[in-house]
Length: 374
Ligand SMILES: Cc1cc2nc3c(=O)[nH]c(=O)nc-3n(C[C@H](O)[C@H](O)[C@H](O)COP(=O)(O)OP(=O)(O)OC[C@H]3O[C@@H](n4cnc5c(N)ncnc54)[C@H](O)[C@@H]3O)c2cc1C
Image (cartoon, rainbow, N blue to C red; front, top):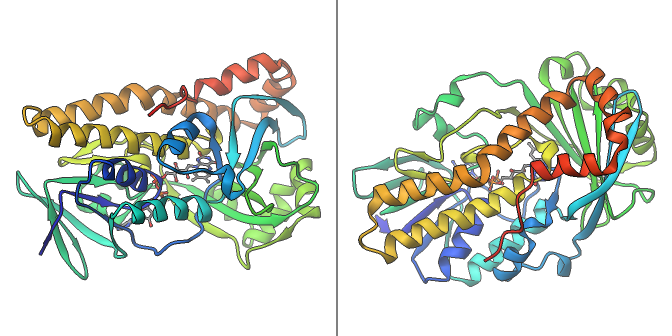
C-alpha cells in the first residue's frame, strides 16, 4: 500500500489547483482522476478574471494559450428582449480541454503523482485516510474531495443532497460561427432553461445550456429540442442557424444538484463543486473552484506547518474560510436562477431594470468575488 502526505480525489479545477499550490511546499501529493487528460467537459467555459492573478502566480497563463478576453455581457428573455452592459471584472473564454490540461501539465512538472483511476471509497480511521480504487489502496493523513458535482462517493459518504432527485440536465457543444464576437458572453433564456454563448481559444463558440428535464423530455432528443424550444428565443435561433457543430455529438450530464452541501465530510476537506455548486448563470463556478483549491491548500499547509494546529482546528479554519468566501454568492446565485427561469419576471426585469447598465453591472457583481491574490 502506497503512502502519501496528501491525496486529492478528482483532478478538475479545484483538485489540480490544490495540488499545484501545495506542491510549492514539496509535499508528497497524489491525485486520483478517473479520465485521462485532455478531455472536454460540460461547462460554459467563461472564466471570471477574479482568478487570473492567482493563476499567473501558479504559472498558468491563459492568454498565452489563446484564451479570449471577454468584457461585455448580454442577456435576453425567451420573447427576444435584450439588455447589455460591460462586465465589472471581465473574463476569459477558454475550453476545459485546454485549461484542465494546462493545470495538469503544471502539476506533473511539480512532481505530483497521478493515478488515472476511479476512487470507490475514502475511509478514515481517526488518523489516516485509505483511498481505494479498483486497482489499489493508498493512505495519507490528509484527503481532499474535489470530485465535482456528483459521484458514487457521495453515496458512500452518505451525504444528504444525494438522496434527492434532481431534474437538471446540461448540454454543451462547440460551434463554428464567425458572426459571434470574441469579447462577448451572452445568456439567453428559453422555456425551462437558459444557455450561454462565448468563444474559446480555438475560435469556436461554446453553447452550453441548462434545462429542466421534464421540459426536455417533451421533445425527441437534442436536435428536436434545439429546434422546438431553444430556437423560440430569436437570438438563439439566429445563432444556431449560422452555426456549424464541431463535436460529432453534444456532451450532456444529468442529475445536477444545486442544494447546499458541507465543506467538510467525515474529515475529508471538500473543494470546488464537491462543496457546493453555484448556478451556472453566475459564470464563476470555475473561478470559485480554483479559489477553493487555494483555500484548502492554505488550511492543509497550516496543518503540516504548525504542529499545534491539529485536525479539528484545520477543519474549522477551512469551513469558516469557505463560508466567508462562498456562502453568500451561492445564495445570490439561487435568487438569480429563480428570476431567470421565470419567463414573465425576466421579460419584465430586462425591459425595465435591465435597461440600466449600472444596475445590471451591480447585480452581476453580487455573485462575483474580489480579485483573488496569492
Ligand atoms: C451547465 C453548466 C455550465 C457552466 N458554465 C460555467 C461557466 O461558464 N463559467 C464558470 O465559471 N463555471 C461554469 N460552470 C461551473 C463549473 O463547470 C464548475 O463549477 C467547475 O467545473 C468546478 O470544478 P471542480 O474542480 O469542482 O469539478 P470538476 O471540474 O467537475 O472536476 C471533478 C473531477 O473529478 C473527477 N472525478 C469524479 N469522480 C471521481 C472519482 N470517483 N474518482 C476519481 N476522479 C473522479 C472527474 O473526472 C473530474 O475531472 C458551469 C456548470 C454547469 C453545470
